[in-house]
Image 1 (cartoon, rainbow, N blue to C red):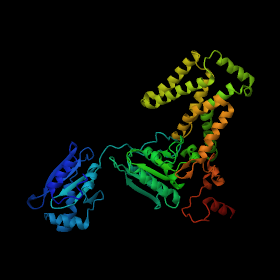
Image 2: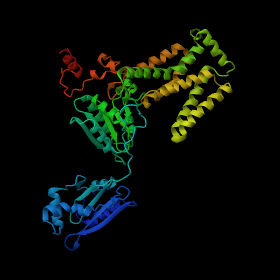
Image 3: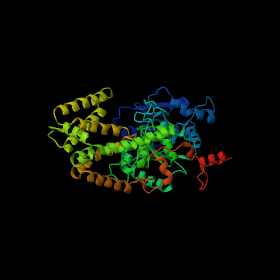
Image 4: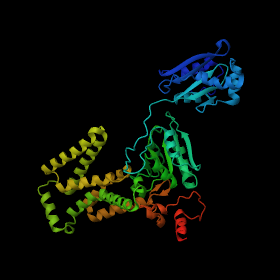
Length: 503
């Protein structure tokens, strides 16, 4: 295809080039037709029948409508000279059509669901967009369900997803830029930002990285995440995902950059900070006090999911003096006759729980949840009966798994699963001191990690006191600045509210 740079003015040559370039494509449909006095002039329409399914539209007549109505008059047969002069001067009026003069552009349009019309004696073609494939309807988000709030989810169509954002953020400063990847797929990517809100250095760094990423094959937003992230060795995600347009718009208002990819319903939010993974869109749809309590609960469950098995190992192996006597006697009774130490017992149960969780995800939805629940009950009861584990260990592992499910963002629960085993090794080796050492290592890693150049642990480090109010608790709405004027020194909405209240 690369050797054909420009469209030829010979219809037969263009037809041969199309057939050669798209050889062995059985869904390629090519229809010759005639026009002009005595129908002596030739043209042909070409498209892929698997992409263009509305075969009732007559693009031959549509392509001539402007010419007949505005140039040569009704009941007058057009000639190739009329076609060339009119369309070169005026283009085409249909918003889904455009003129192209490069052969590789014509092939790209055919492959993207356009009907392309070639005329004899003219070195250009007209392409009509008529992509017609079955699309998933806008439904409720599958991974971010809420009790109160919007219930729209993004889908696999890029333009529809952009429209869902546009209808919520009707602002001329909301910019959308598109690009196409290299390689074989030619996937269309779009990224958006709110001009004036986004940090200019962060935006410049993002554009540099996305230019690097676009040379690779991109099929999903996760491909972009891997290509532009700061640290590939870190278990912690450096970007957030969402299927909710309201969450994406809220991120734009906070100065974030959103990335959308044709063919996937996930929106990538850049940069993603550690504290943001504990926030849910429903936090801002409930009352402040309740939302703050729930968010604080998520922080507690994060540490429970990370520390609970390790604390059990450390307390039962090294620090039995810290356990109340009655509880210690109960633990000793449950562990009597067990052949394995607490560390191996915990590793086995965590491993079995992860297997059940993965099986529940991969199995068909109607039976996945049933298998995971029944499997956990059967395996837990069987392990206790066989004296492989104690009932308390089953409870601890179950609580650990449930705690990880309470975190809104799925990808922040993944590092918890990765870090559990190393932390249990430290606790089995050094007890409570080992847990402290491991937590210090994780804390130092988080403090040094960057997301698109920004500190990952912000606003905790470097400390930003004004932003701490919306980290562990939810900030009241009246304290949020909705001003579109970013002139330094302009008072926020809340300051304006207080000034009016004093009057």
